[in-house]
Length: 134
Image 1 (tube, one colour):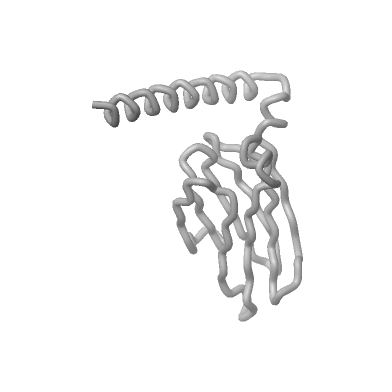
Image 2: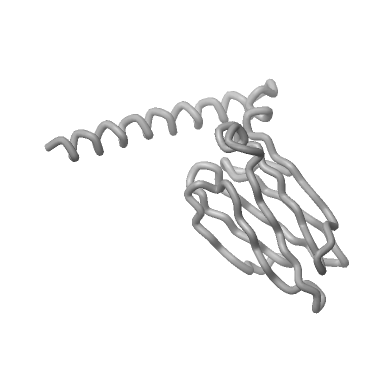
């Protein structure tokens, strides 16, 4: 699992294929790639649960993305599972808050991004409540 511009990126290698799932934690956009070709793109605002169905070497394959409970949604903790022909073949996990706790420049940048999104959310909520009132 890696991070790129507030995206979590999970890469699975299976039978000479590279399967990559990218999820933007702030916008909810999700991309699924098979061998660098875009298979599916979703916009899931909650990003709590997603399923992707596709065919891999003539076998049905599925990727499941699920938050680790309600606290996982708040922390950015996710499990990603790859199933091929109904069998679990690989898993991955991501925890955004654990990444924030690591020292170094990435932590500072992530905290700045988080603060920016909190301020933007507050401003949006304030503007929306003001518009509804008037």
